[in-house]
Amino acid sequence: MAVIAATGLAAQPALAQKTEASKADSSKKKTVSAPVSILPAAQATSAAKPAVKPQGEAVTKPAAKTASRPAAQPAVQPTAVPTPVPMISQPVVQDAVLAEPIMAWSLADAKALLSTVEYIGKEGLVPGDYQPAALRAAIAKGEGDELDALFSRVFGWLIEDLRDGRTPMTARVQWFAVDPDQDLMPTAQIMAQALSEHDVAGVVAKLAPTNPDYAALKADLNATPMANKTRRALIQANMDRWRWLARDLGDVYLMTNVPEFQLRLVVKNKIIRSYKTVVGKPGRTATPQLAETVSAVVFNPTWTVPQSIVKGEGLGAKVLNNPGWAKSAGYKGTKNGDGTITVVQQPGPNNSLGLMKIDMPNPHAIYFHDTPAKQYFNSEVRAFSHGCIRTERAVELGMTMAILGAQKSATEAAEISRSGKYTKVEMTRTFPAYLTYFTYARSIDGQLKPFNDLYARDKPVLDSFAAPRQLKTTQRASEEEIIKLDNPL
Image (cartoon, rainbow, N blue to C red):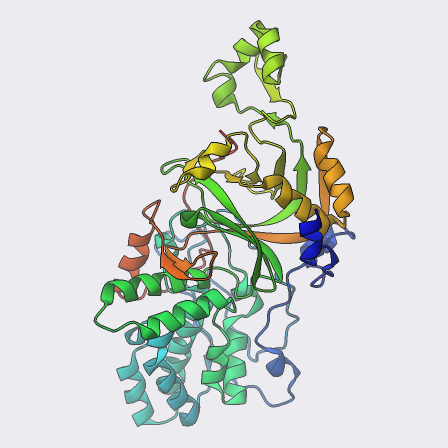
């Protein structure tokens, strides 16, 4: 553990305030995610805010499942900006079309928005989406209700696309991470700030993801000739994927890029550790895209075998009928009152979870874990699991998490890991964990490169950019079936 101590990780301070959610859960929990806001000036200034005009009701799809978003209030009031938390993975069934607030526009601000739209291609968006011809015509007619309505609507679209991504939710295959940015940076607040400060371009510039990997993609896009449409489209799609995540990922987090087969431990935008991974096989066991919270590290875990194996593959009967074999294999079987059999694999080097598991509660039952099948880390394409992320040098990772998240010393972490006993180390500081899917990105060595589209998730995104922009709805994550993937085999 001298290597861990040498990095300075053990001395990392708590890196942010408590989240509201963690306050309700436990007074002991802290979070390392830093508050995200591009609006401090607008909230602190005493300058008059632009008037907010009455907003029409949100237009809903046929047989909409929920009521539309509430109309804007007569004036934009400063609001407390909550500390961002890792995105919550859950199915969202609301699909009402969003309506933008209508505010008063001066000609100077209108011209600034038009100029911003004309150069928005540098951010990987499509200028034509924001009706530049209509904006010019409205400017020519002068100030008034028509100008206010058009520019508020178009600016709302631009805010939504830069903050949340242009790709419609229906094209984000297996995307179950709910981006918190629209809650932390509401459209009305952003628009009010831009108009009160007369700084449309400046406010727009602050909406982009803060991760340096996004900046690298942006630079590469603008260095790629317009004639190379295929490459530009791929960069554009992956820039948008960054916008699907929180604008600021936090100071300390875990991130795995599934097609790269790598996991990173990142501290202040620097990769401190990287680990090879084995991810889900294509099909029903493909690893979904999530953003969760590391809640605990389990050393020497047990594994409760799913019924698909206990009953479906006959393991339960084998364990009960062959106690000698079961003991040597590390299985304990129990026959329940209803006739079902519960099989639990005991801790040990042959446990299917290996010697470490990182808990990050989610409805998909996905987690990072060790594995006794180390040979798979030698493969170039490492898609062999049932969805969970097998992690190289997992015990080292678990010890690092125990030091960072539970204030364990390196000696304590090492003793726990070597004890051979099931030990759950609860985090007193929580960490985001992001399971992402980038097919053109910076690799762990810092070089931009393409990655194989392992699960064929590029085409819907590319197709959406080739088609007209769709209106945003209240849907926040994929509505696909949630498949519990708690089988580490």
